[in-house]
Image 1 (cartoon, helix red, strand yellow):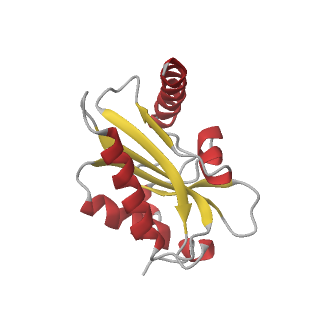
Image 2: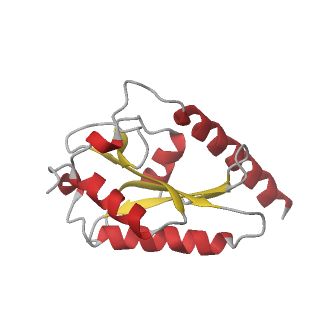
Length: 165
């Protein structure tokens, strides 16, 4: 039990630092409102459906590219290079669940992003409204449901980069 607590605390600290780092506006990063690709349409649909969701970010490599980036989000971080956590979720099929240490009203869940065939094509980062004692398993289940609903609409990773209709 103690091992889990230390791991959870360390993960939460890393996620908190990452959240603080990308919360600052970076003029080099794209604006969500200007992001006219299919992936952004999917993010916008989910944000409209889930008022409990504060942040939704989709990470994937563009076909032919070596590196993975934030390709769609409700925040102005389009193009942000993936950090170690984003890559671990996508490449190692890890799931990250952690309260935000610096902002205790937020709980972060990152899950592998899949296409309609079930192939892992990137990572999906979610941040939920949170209060001490909230059901964290429920937030994990909600993140998986959002991911699975989106996956049904993703034939392959290339489709995410097509112009929005």
